[in-house]
Amino acid sequence: MKTLLDGLQLTPHDTVIFLGDVVDRGPDSRDCIDQIIALGQRCRVECIQGNHEQMMLDAIDGTMPIQEWLVHGGAETLDSYGKNFGVGGIKPDHVEFLRTWGDVVERPTHFFAHGNYLASRPLTRQPWRDLRWQSLKWHTPEAHLSGKTAVVGHTANKQAEILNLGHLVCIDTYCHGGGWLTGFDVTTGRIWQAKETGEFQAADLPPIKSLAALRF
Image (cartoon, rainbow, N blue to C red; front, side, top):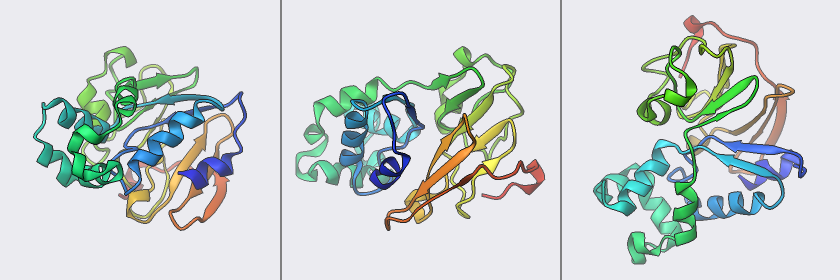
């Protein structure tokens, strides 16, 4: 994450929207949250809750068995805080910060969600299960009734390719599996990507693909 954020050369006038699953996707969840909090002192930051943030909070609240969270990436997250302390070792300010994350961020021409959406339902009435949990493999939605372009993550493309359907752009390029962590400037169509190895690259949004060309 640090490589990508450094490469963006952000200014106080910029807004960065995180699409969720910041936790459970590697060994440095604690540091990733610290980076986002620090970034909020430099520019505007908005965060969307993914299914992994939900699992983490559910485990902390006792509404999900902790073992279920641990086998889905929670063990690495807990390690980053010091696993000997259990969920009680997770920084309270991090927990409260995660609780502030919403489900949808809306802009004049785009909206942002973690996973998916229902095309025929207003953005204020979207089911949280679809927003956080539903994969594009299970359901690829049509254009949203608002006419706005959707930007989502969650459904990892194991070829590390950005999916551009015109009405929907998925930027989950399999970072946790060796692919890229992707940033997308919706105002210019510019893409920035970084790997754990420190590699960094920039490009333009790829051409629109048809549904028949979908590969995950």
